[in-house]
Image 1: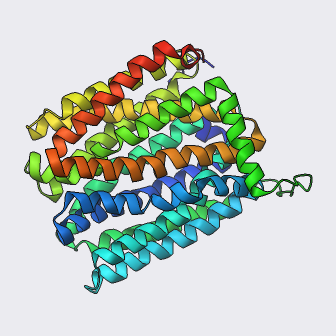
Image 2: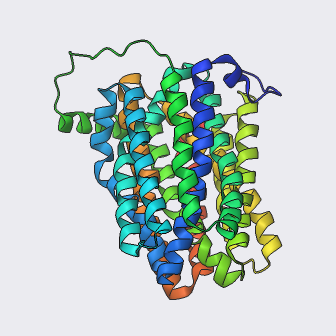
Length: 407
């Protein structure tokens, strides 16, 4: 498919995907409000960069532990039903944060516990939601649908932090969690309006969950393109995470900004990401995807190295716009290339591996490592160090693994 001026063509074409995308995007605005507020709340409660990283890691540890089993469950279950149930549970979690903060009973222990519950639900919800997309649009429109999902994610990242800062200033932090709880109703309405063919259980599958997990590992390890791409995703997830995790510390201690300035930094990342996702959705097959992956990977890492040196808020805002653009082009390309390469009966397991790496391994190792390094050498140097290693790996990988340049 050639480049088109209309990146929203897939939305116009598929009713189910419109419902899914609209509800998810509205809900994600609330999610980003909560994400900003949780990081700022952890910093206020503890005044510790390490604890900010620990809260981020707590929401990802269950994903690290249970994603592979969840992938087998997804491949053998009704994906739409799983996503509906998970969204209800996430509504409960947001409501608890709302209540505890509003009543003054919130502690760092509660924040950690609810972050862990969020991660437990997400360990199943993420691979189910990722695997559901192809059922909503079909294989031919999969690349564009994933890019549009990224655009919705980044639209929420643009709107969410700005709204969150305003809500904190006018109504207090508790209402960031309250708005997120209410926003889950939007995604649930969309999910219950989706109509798909009745799910039919495959009774021919007799392997145990452990055997199913091992089968997924063998497929990934035995497919050179998938294995090389998975490793690239792992490096970018672990080493690219600290810049977002440490953003509250960078905003306050390096750039000397308050909650409003912190929201502006996150919004700049989101605006860049939104434009990157829309640009990618409009490209079709106009550019070789392997080449785009190489360029976006190098640009993302290189700009992060430069961002670590910035001390002027407005320059930081501009830098974060570019970082957001290339970060989302990189992640959306990697996701769509993986999904296009995998057979349907492996998709849940591959997306579970993807969420294990991106959300679980990336957040647990990346957030904890970033917080630990920042405690010793500062948040800016922690970002610069991890980005330098990421850039070095990128330059090596695209030379040593030619399969990455093939698609």
